[in-house]
Structure formats: structure tokens, C-alpha cells
Image (cartoon, rainbow, N blue to C red; front, side):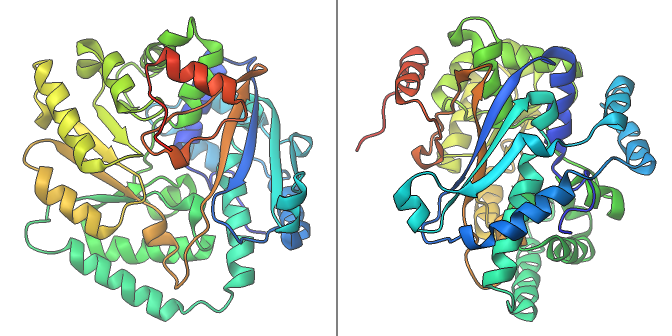
Length: 397
């Protein structure tokens, strides 16, 4: 059993789920799986994946797990009452060989998740962890873990260099980890090697187990769903941020900046939001150019960037963390969430697997990030309309 606790997921799933409970309890959504890496044959592994999905849907929150969540300052009592009754519904998720004949011939699979947002939001992270671990331990069962630990020690030593004492990182690797056991071992090594430079982990189960800080706020699906749940489309981003602020009253104040690209984010992230939110998260595009523009944006609004925090979570490596920290740490607050580089560096590249929301209340939803390869929408006409509304130019062929 790969997933043995419903806490084995990222914190932002719970923070978003609480918003859904209180503001959008009737929303209906659809998610789809995509593997961006060619040549990954998953169809032969479907029996194992199905068995793991069966096991996932048998889990319930234990009293001890609920007590832990209850102790988080931003979790409300009625949400805990809901989770006490919660269970993932197996009928809401289907994994099968790909419908497209060419994709099927390549061994690709389709995974679809449909149902109430409140009852399906917790599928994404554990399902990605399941598919990733089933594939990795099947194809690379004999990964050289001793060599991987040696590389990890090198990364820890890099982050302990003079001048990086204030550089803090967090584990964001649950979705693309080699295995659950490996993530635990790596996190233990990081905790002992980095000390206070380890800010925490996005994985709630491991945060509870290791007495670390659980970290996370919002993900793309939240702002995507607001395209169908808010007022007119142009006000979607503002509506999402204002709803979040009403729910958390100044807590969990890191805004996601790339659902419509940076320029559309900056147009909406006015003086009010600059002051209200603690900072913003980068997840696509050039992080150096992004940081310069964020610092300039705060300065134009007479907000001191040194009092704000910019969070980085896009395919980070320790080399990139070091470069960003050395360049910007005196000008703005910085935080780094590292995923695959820590949790799947076992001698082979981790497949780029994602599960994204594609519809909400029957309407297409999409993100248009600063990295076109990360965009995912099944309706080209809607994507073109979204670009027009948010004044986003189409990528150059």
C-alpha cells in the first residue's frame, strides 16, 4: 500500500479544501492526468495502479490525524467535523488505457476524476505519488540509493556554504518522489544536515511525524476554478484573492502569480493586494526576471520588498537556489520549495506527470503560465478567449 494516510498529501490541498467547503460547496469539477515525458509506458502497470486506488479510497482520517489538523492555527472546527466523515469515492476516479489509438500504442493511460470539488480535491497528490512510485519502482527498482545519498550530502554541503546561512529551503517533493519511504529518508537527512535551514515540508503526514512545519497556501486549480465560480471572467483573479483573504483574514498570505502569466498578475495585484498579502509564489518562467519585476512592482506601490517574501517552486535545483539567494537576499525576502531535485534524484529522470483541473461546473478552465509547456486545456476556443480577456499574447511558434 503506497498511501497509508490521507495526510500523505500537500498542505495546500487542505487549505484550498477549507475554502471550497465554506465558499463553493456545490462546485462540480473534472481533472485529467497527463504525462509530459514521452516514452513512459504506464498501461502495463494499470492493474497495480487500480489496486492502489482501491486502497486509497478505503482510507479515513484517524482521530490522531484530525487532532493534528485541529492544532493548525488556520484550520476551522467545522472543517475538522467534515473531515471526520470524509472518504474518497472510488467511483469518481477512472484509470484506463488512453483513448487515442496512437497514445494507446505508446502505452499511455488516461486518468479522469469527476465529481464535487469538495469530494475530489484530495485525489491529485496521492494519485500522482502512486503512479510515480509504481512506475519508478518497476522500471528502476534497483536505483543506486547509496550514490543518491552521496549526491544529497553534496547538496546539503552546498547550502551550508558561507554566505548562505539565511537561505532556507522546504521539501515540495511529494508528487514526484521516487517513493514514500525515500522521501522520508531524504527528509530525515535534510533535517539533520541543514538544521534551521530546513523550513519545513509541504507533506502533512511527514510534518506531523517529524515535527516539522507544514507549508503551503494555494495552487493553480483554485484560481482556475474561480473562472467558473466568480463574476465576469476578467475579475476572476481578483475574486480569487479576495475570497482567500476573507477565509484566512491575513494568514496564508502567499499569492500564486502565474495562472495568467506575470503581467496579468501584476495588473491585478494592486496596492491593496501588495499590502494585504505577504508575498507571491513563482512557478513558471525565468525566476530572475520575475524577481526583478516583482521588486519593481512593490517599489512602484511604495511597499518595501524587504518586508515581503517571494517563494520559488519551479523545478528548483540547489544551484538555482544558491544563485537566486546570492543575487536577491538583501533586496527581498526569499523562500524555496524544492521537489524533484531532492526527492527523485536516484540516477534517472523523473517523468513529468501532472493532474490538472480542466472543467468546473461544466465550463472549461485553464491556466496560461509564463512557460507554455505547462499549459493544459481541452478547449482551444476557450484558451483563445482567455488570452484575449487577460491581454496575453499567444506564444511564438
